[in-house]
Image (cartoon, rainbow, N blue to C red; front, side, top):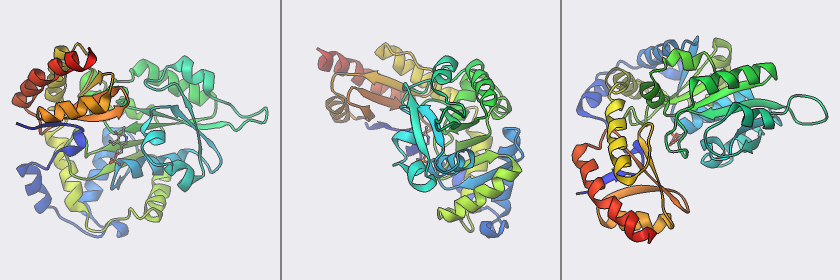
Length: 331
Ligand SMILES: Cc1ncc(COP(=O)(O)O)c(C=O)c1O
């Protein structure tokens, strides 16, 4: 048996999702004429309580567009050192937007920690134009930023003339785990990039959520980056299907992750089980030979990510295979 826990991006569309994709009504979205994309954008904007939304091919493009909406060229982005936007986006903010990034300690943000680093205008410094926060935090093991912290960050950024961006690749997991309504999250951010292709199981697609004014600019940036798609309603249909069918079921992924976490002595909050080992590569190789595929996220860190294509049998298999390996390879 092979259980693939490398990432929740690995899901394949279900038969129901494929049917919805095949039946999608489409048009040319660069002309604004794809009815399924228009419906998806309206739906996602409404869920987060914003005026507008823009469908984009990937979470990376969503983030990159948002960063340019909130930080001018030569302006400063502040985020944590493990954030996807500075770790896995290949310097896109610098290259595309001329944005300089400064980081604080990796992992979940605290209001005090961000306040220490945030630079208001004046004294010859480059002021912080925007702060970016990940919800959930990917390298932080799927941990959820609390509403209290996010509200504090909102107050802090407002008080200092900075904007607030959310890399919400897994904000659906945060919503289901915490019970915080999506529009409560939405109300705290100027821009959000939310992914349909992670826990929700769509094959492609993310959505930029923002004001109507910023959305007009986002469409220009999307086109400039080559992300203007044509009859992509077939993809948006997968996203709409996922919103109907795959949000509440994330609780099942969280329960399975918790079961695997308990077997390894690790606490989990959502669908990611972070595992600390002396040699991450050796551990992942040993796990692979037992039929368990893990993601390597650092020299001493692997992760098991639970998703739509992982069932109870898969978790049982991982629970049998991994604890003895932790014991053997930590000795
Ligand atoms: C936190 C986070 N943000 C953004 C992305 C980028 O998404 P994509 O792979 O669709 O570009 C990912 C991808 O896994 C992610 O984990």
